[in-house]
Length: 437
Image (cartoon, rainbow, N blue to C red; front, side, top):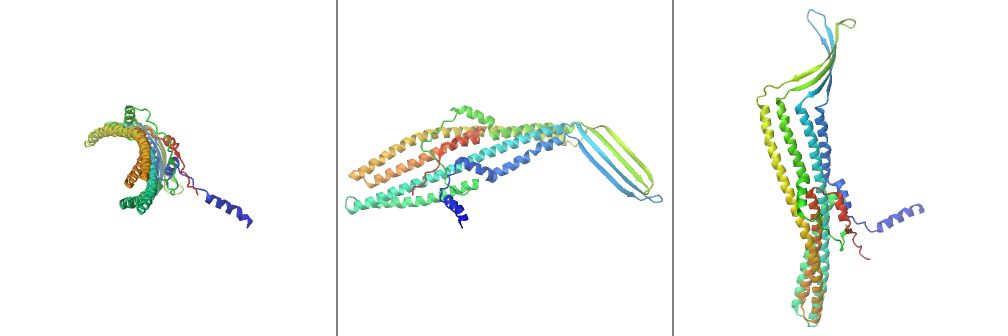
């Protein structure tokens, strides 16, 4: 039995340790291996990379081997066996359509990689949004818990003052109404927190664990560069959707040349080796021969019912569409960059204003509590001051989260969002304080 005591002791100690908090970077790396949308994009990337191999195949030699083994029966003549094989090789020398297909396939691979890059940036945004949604829901619930405790204290005080005749029943009713309302809000906040946690767990595939929280002294940085114009310019050139549309335009332009190649001649190098054997019976051979050939084969299309001309007109129209799609993508990227830039700059100003408002609200609450104790303030004044403080704290926390999310959206619009940006934000987080026993 002593043999089992040490493992059991270790298990007990492990179970008694507090669960480690999950930070933003860990949540993102969990999502990399679990998120179904990102897994789909990864599989699409693997499939898309095969396009260049398939396009190059049209420029490489085509080698084939064929053979036959026949029994021939003839009237008024001896039957015989016919057997042979042919080894052939065809190497394209001049084929404009095949070359354009290969060039298109390389562009298609680049477009697939751009789509995958967008999926990676989208995953960063989705995980970050879900993570900070949980933190915001936790802050809301914590604020309601604190507000509920304060209202309970104020309700008890109002009842005591009413009992001794220093306050009216109105103070008690007002505090009771506020208490009943905060209980309903608390229930709704608990449900919202559970929903937000499930949304994050859906991305990471991990059970809900304590999350690292944003430090109170975390300093949010201005975007660099601090001017909007460079961000907009970068977004118009490097945004992943813009890059994808640019590649689509190049593919459409090459499709025009590819379709026009329907009028162009093709030239192939051809070589073959044939061996044929004819036997009338097992012991006699009536015919046998080997043939080797090598040369050039060409073909010139003359008439195809105007199909080639129609395909060229179709490709030109699709090129115009691709150019319009590119311009639309640039405008959308520029607008996204402007919106995110305004979100960061206004968010920083809002955080600064709310920090000052929090100090003022706390001072106002203390003043109202003092005034209530000396009889120059009524119960409703204290309750309003409490509500103002907790609302300010909740708005401050949300403004900080929104500013961080907008900073990520700004880089996503510019096409520069990477895991390093998450690492930078992750340094602003700290494990939550464990409740004292």
